[in-house]
Image (cartoon, rainbow, N blue to C red; front, side):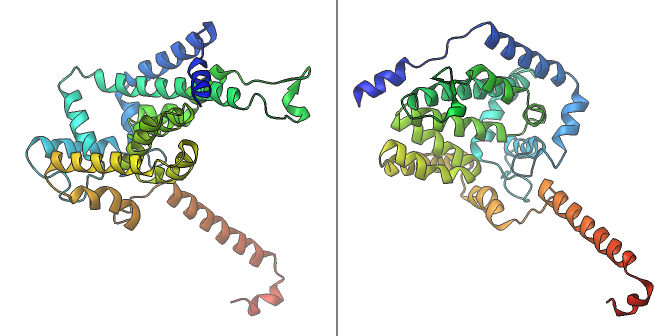
Length: 292
């Protein structure tokens, strides 16, 4: 096991010109677009990109209440984890550019970790049998890790999520860090970041089982980290109301703000009605009296 861990430690991606160009262009695109406030406002209000649980506008409302001594979870407008209040309150004391830079750097860090995960995966599977499609001149084909980073960084939805200042970005970072440290067989950090992802969004709870399988039964670490985060949250807001407002809103759906799923459902419903109308129109007139 120690030899295996040493091999994983030695697996690192080496920065090259391709990586520098990809990350440099991605940074420049995001930084320039952040200068147009109307773009960030429009994207921040689009239901295709943000939800009540990830909206920066909702986070701003919660920060205002928290800063004025009002319980941020009163009124049902704020649905995000208490740690966001503490972190973004600290950022509010810094220059205005600090928040866009935080989102940009987070996005770049996710892309870098995805490249590193790609390299680790290829190292772990290097001795596995391959099918003909995966071979080139008798040797396994390898995906360039920087291409993986580029696919992430230049995905329009990824760029839009960054510009909208959706807090989902931090959940994604926690998920990627959890996978990264699990693959590197770092039990403590792996379980911490999966616990953090669960704390921020609840859905990453599903990652616990595969992580336990990778790290050979470390449920207690996960429970310990998650319990610590919840207790810290209680100390921040001096109440357990955040449990209902953050995880309850995901499970019970009290805030039915329209989202992309609703839009798709309504679109499909309209198409079905149009199809039914078209069928009726195609039926001979002498059959119409039999249609309900």
